[in-house]
Image (tube, rainbow, N blue to C red; front, side, top):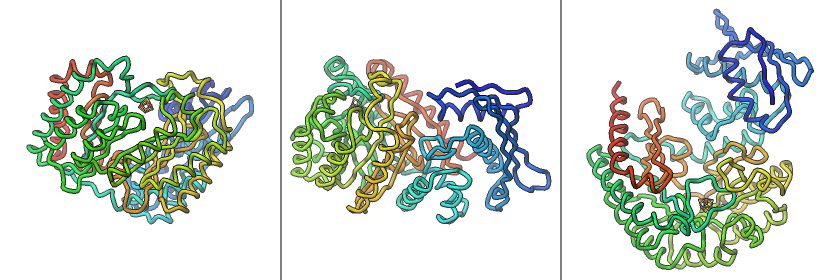
Length: 488
Ligand code: SF4
C-alpha cells in the first residue's frame, strides 16, 4: 500500500489516515494519493462538513458529507472533536470504496462506544441507528453490539474501591503455533518456576497490604497466562492461599484457567475447590485430534472430555470452554462438530474466538493461512451465534483483535446469571484491575472521568523475578500517583 498526500492536507487528516488505513489495507496493493481531506466546523454551528478527493489506483474520487447529527445537544465540545476524526475515517472508507463489517471502528473494545452513548443519554434504539449510519457497522454487527451492551449493563457499575485482580502465570506445557501470549514451555523454562512463584508471592503480599491501606476490596480474581495448571498443584495452591490475604468480598469470583486440559489433575481440582475457585476454563479449541496435533496443543479430544468430567465431579460451579474458528485445515463440518459436541456438555460459559494471526506467533503467516474462506468463516460464525443463542446462552462480552480473520470478533456467551464479572470489567475497563505476575497489566480506572492508566509487569519470568523488588516499589508509587489525580 502506498499513501501519499498533496500539499494542503492538514496534520490531523494525515494522522487519521496513517493510523486508520493500515487496519484495512495491510495486504492490499493500493496506490492512494489524497488530494483533499478536510472537516470544517462552521462558526454558526450548522454541523460538520467533510470534503475529500483522492486518486485511488489511478481513478479520481470525490466525496462530501454534512454531519448534522452532531448538533444533538447531548454531545459536548469534546464530542465535536472526536466526530471530526470519525468523519475523516468515513471519508477515507468512501474514497477507497471499502465497507468493513465493523465500519470505522478499529479498536479492541467496540463495546465502549455503546457504553459512552448510553452515558450521554441515548436509548438503545437510537444507538442502533447511529452505529449503522455514523459508524458504518453492518446491521449484524450493530445488532450484536447492542445485544452485548444490554446484557452487560447490569454489571457495569463502577466503584472506586472495588477492584479485580489478574494473575499472569507465563508457563504452558508447549507453545501453540498461533500463540502470542507471554508464555514459555515448562519443558524449556520449568527451572524458572520456583523463583517465579516466590516472586509472585512477594508481589501478592505487598499489594494485599496496600489494598487494606487503600480500603480496596476485591470482587474478582482471574488466574490466567499461560496455563496456571501447568504448575504443580502445590505451587498453584500456594498462590491461591496467598491470594486469600487480599480483602476478598464474600461473593468473590475466582477463575483459574486450565486452558490445556491435559494439565488438570484431580489434585489441581481439589486445590481449586479448597481455595474457593468457582470458575474454571478448560479449552478444547477444536474437537479434532488432527487439528490439535497440527496446532501444537499436545493433548487429545479425550483429554478434554476427561478434564470436563473431573470438573463436573468436583463441582466447580462455572465451567468455560473456548473454541477457535478459522484454524488452518478446518472446514465447516469440523466447526459444526466441535460446536455441537461442546454444546452437548452444557458449559455455563462458552467463548468463540476467531483466529487472529499475530506476528509474535511461532507460525509463519503462511502457516496461519489456509482453511475456510473469509466469507464462509463469517457465515459460519453468524450461524453458530444463532445456534448458541437458541440453546440458551447469551453474548455478554466481546472484543476484537488486529489481523483477526474475516474482520470478525471474539464473543463470550453465558447462561443467564453465569456471566464472568472479570471478563466484563476487563473488556469494558470500568473497574481497576491489579495485575500481578508475568506480563500482567495493571489498569487503574479514574473514578470520575473513566480514563485508564496502564502499567505492565515484565513478560519474561526471569526478568520478572530479578526485578521483583524494584517493580513492586515502582508500581506502588505509580498507583499512588494515579490515585492522587482523583482529587485534581
Ligand atoms: S495454551 Fe494458550 S497461552 Fe499456552 S501456548 Fe497455547 S495459546 Fe499460548
